[in-house]
Image 1: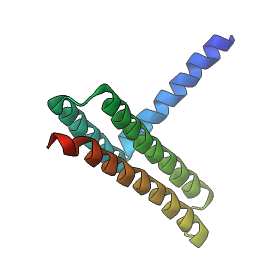
Image 2: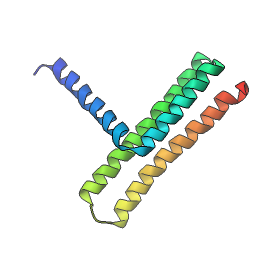
Image 3: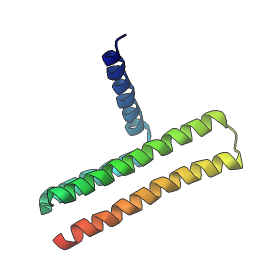
Length: 117
């Protein structure tokens, strides 16, 4: 298999992972709903290209954090199917990281959209 074919195949795996995240994770749907609402608001208020860049980066950071969290949770469930306090702590820390990203994105949203309100 050539190098280009390997790269194309790796993109396929990545898209498969995104599909798994969106199909199986309720919180990912919540984040996607927020993305849709913020995108509509951005078009409605006519935010600047710079503001779009900041908002889109926030979208990506929050969804990526949710993806990392999901991967960590699934891996922990695989290696520690029974309750273990360290496994629980790992999952809590990963979920906390998503919350930090979501709060930061919400603050950015307020900073970007407040002047338009």
